[in-house]
Amino acid sequence: MSQRDSLGSDSEDGPPADETESVEETDNENSEPDHRTHGKTEDAGSEGGAEDGLGDIVDNISESLTDEGFGVYHGREFISIREGGHLAPNATITERYMEGKVAVVLAYNESDNEIAVIPLEEKYDRPNIFALQSGDPPTISARRFLKYHDIIPDQTIRYSPEWDEDLGGDAVEGGLRIDLDEDGEVVNIATDADEPAEE
Image 1 (cartoon, rainbow, N blue to C red):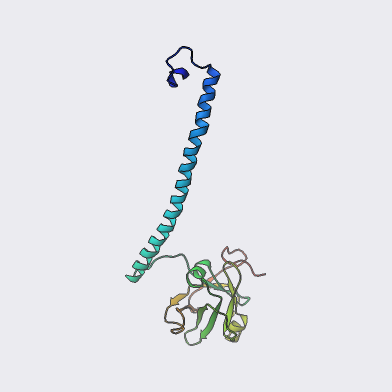
Image 2: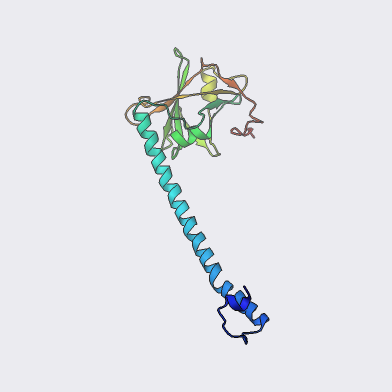
């Protein structure tokens, strides 16, 4: 089919070829980009809304499964105790239990060889309260606590703590128990992505 036929011309004296091409290009510039741009804008908006909605759905499903006694995987949870005297929760622990918190209560149970970590929304001037130091994820400078109880490790060790909603009493949501009798994982903080080396 000729360009003249495609334009619906029934006359032999149609516009010259170069004018015909110009008309086609002008039509394309005025129509197609608008449709494509409009389509992309709608898709981007709907994808963002769908993603938000999907997150809510997944959270509701996870909560329902937890209520039914299922263990829902949220990512590996650990806290490292560094030989320099820092406690370093990983990103998963931070997101799940320390979002919006600024300090922790630290306590040691010698008979069970456990450390309790109770996240707090406020920092109080008490010797058993330690600030969350800025970082991503944050760390807890606890050398005096670890030294007092003689539990500073010779090398950095990762432990998998357990969340206990009854720990700390009614004033808080719960706390983390670190069982030091657990076979922790020795790590090199200089090469560990989740735990940057200390300055």
